[in-house]
Image (tube, rainbow, N blue to C red; front, side, top):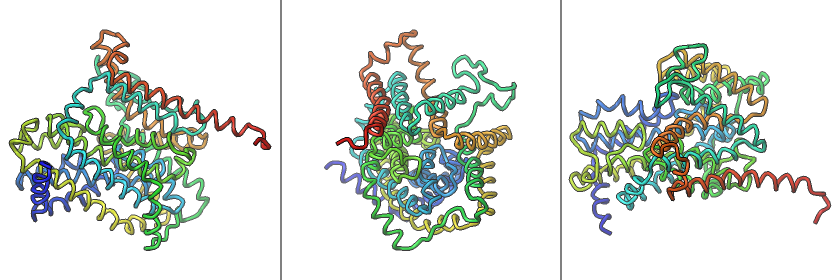
Length: 506
């Protein structure tokens, strides 16, 4: 075990007083950053990057990595408690986390999110420790055709997200794709779908604006309708017995958590993917292969554990190409990469040999940060639960202010605030008409990634579509995507056939 000695040395470095302090501080700040809609790990790491010049490089990267880690945990908090995704990585957690909170199971959802995040983080760190160089080489085999095929696979999982009405699911997905094309063409630079020639549409529609509008404002409108004057929107009584029960119920989530961890890690090491597609694909897979897919979107705990384990695993996975190849796997790791260059470090194949204390100190700190993040998250569960006990007359304005500031923050544009209100009304109406809104949100996240890889592929092949079938990895992903597209439809047909069978049969 030639890895054991440097790993132990790395953990010893990570638990040095200054590094341990950086881990705890980073995790707490990360939880706050992740829970604040519109802030996210990218902004948190970028804002606090100058602070790290006061400490040695190892402590600095540990601090920023802990913020990144904590933010992945924190994103679930606002998704579950308020129905507002703190970041794009937590969008999928909203689908089932919020319904669980609304029916008085917020404690169970928060515990599930924390434990799944811990499991996802642990599995990914172990994979990172054992297989960093070969996985980095594997990730290099991914070109635009493979990336597009991967996006097709992700889109194929959407079919299972919309319940029994496939037509409405496809409509919702297409609507999301149309919204994703608003702005400037990524190659020609020509304006596309600039409604009413408004300047605000030139920077496109941020997925967070759509998600906050639909799940934040839409949720307020929906709650106003269903509460019918009731001042409390959720009754939660937290006790040690309920916490113990929440841990006991986690045994039903083992499969989705482990699968989400591996999916997330795999998506994380790919430069074009990252935590957001990873969490969405993990959610879609969990629903597609569930024995009870109809309960997803209604408060199925597997709908919380799958994306949460995936986004934490992806956050560690995205560090891999950054350290071993010098290629950032996500926007946050791009900021981390910039910080490393400023500190005088050169990410790439030689980093493990030239700066072993730095690399193994970082890896050791990930183990420590993972444990602290779970403990701090669980310790704050009573505080988060207390939020739900607030009367809706107080909670609604708070949610509204968070929605508006969260939507304004990314581009600092009032245009986005008006869009949030518009999408809020649209989300409310779609919900009343029983249209699934999740595929639309997912489409606006993955649409630009799919478009970029598709056009790069076709430019490289001079328009030959066979490029997607000629490359083995690409063809394999397309085949899996086709199977995932057909599987829910076949399941639905069989279900309807059973329902239509005479009751006396058998």
